[in-house]
Length: 388
Image (cartoon, rainbow, N blue to C red; front, side, top):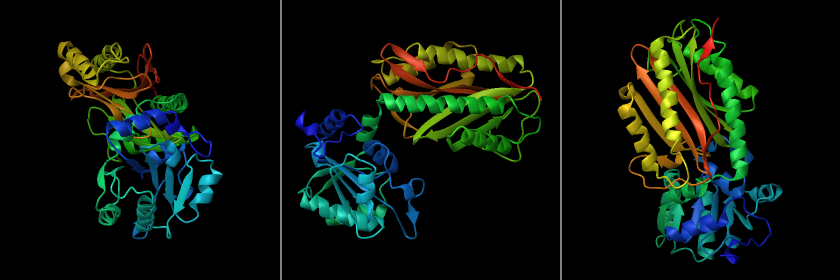
């Protein structure tokens, strides 16, 4: 394994090379060939062609690149991109030892170059993992037609398994983004006004995110008593009503999402009970979150709590991994016997809702640590209150 991790140009890849090569062995893959923005950025240490960072589409085609890592070792890894991309890759000090360029800035041109490279490397009868849910249909058809002896399989489980354990630098970035997200939601929930529409509130979240250097993704805003969460000009926050904001942002490509609930004026006793339910449910779940416990055990613990809780029939618990992708490994569900690992990062969601009060929800980012877990977004025990 030692030699397999060596890169000819001396640069070190930013990911756990031994973990990746072990995953290729586990899934019996000869070549990993990734093409999505998030996985390309992960494997390069943040690089993606700047013009296409947010939108890769062009007339009748799109920008596409391939990053290949063979089972034999990192030293034979390669990149296939658009004309002129080799220079950009080198300028960015990307670790990849070999780059190739297609003739045109078009997905089929890049795919044709990738086929040529695979044939040159005697990989035209290999077992190759590609990102099936994201690969353009015309590109996949070309690959299958030009490489009829290749067995194509899905690369998503491999990349999910690689990204599931976060590096210290990833954790630090996500920690920073989580803090900024929480500050932004607190600013919005403590400065509400009677009659503000949920669309206006979502716009305010976007502004607060931008002021803190976050890239706004979404804000779901639910004003009670209601379960409707899409921002709307027809729905508003009124005095005495609760409101939750479930909002996501990006920092350096990583997603940070939180949900916080506030009240315009004094909350009712019934609303207090629902918020307390969220906190009690979170406490029950985090007591078991640690390395080695299975995803199924976590979900069963949360559901057992709800079964015995006075308002449990109104509650729900959801948890999933998060990072470069909104929902990634580990997924917390009763059918999963996957054990949690130190470095896993979870988004945990606790919610209670009734027709009289509405939808009370708390969502936090939780890191699995060696000794248990750490909530990266410790929330207020009480309400975020607006008193206009």
